[in-house]
Image 1 (tube, protein in one colour):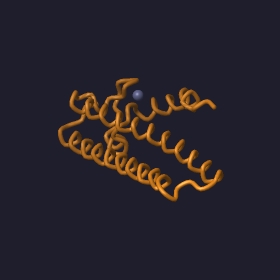
Image 2: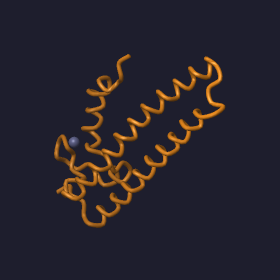
Image 3: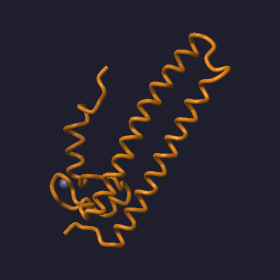
Length: 128
Ligand SMILES: [Zn+2]
């Protein structure tokens, strides 16, 4: 069975804590950065306004990504509680403990993940 033992579950939980802390730190940094642009002495001319617009767009797509990552972390914790962590969602094989430690929100084993990226990479790209 590809299930994690208690020690592995504890280690993956720690990895998830770290993953979440990293995402939250990045969110805070992005928020602080976006605030520095506003307020008094912020935008002076059209050039700076365009840059401010661009930054706002970057920040909102960043915020979206961070939200996704936090959601993935919550789902990964659920799988740990349910005992389905470490099981590939596509082939029911083992994701692999080292892979989970490196990427605690991984849903698939390496071969399913590779296939998934090949078939979904283009669909996930935003269309302009
Ligand atoms: Zn798989």
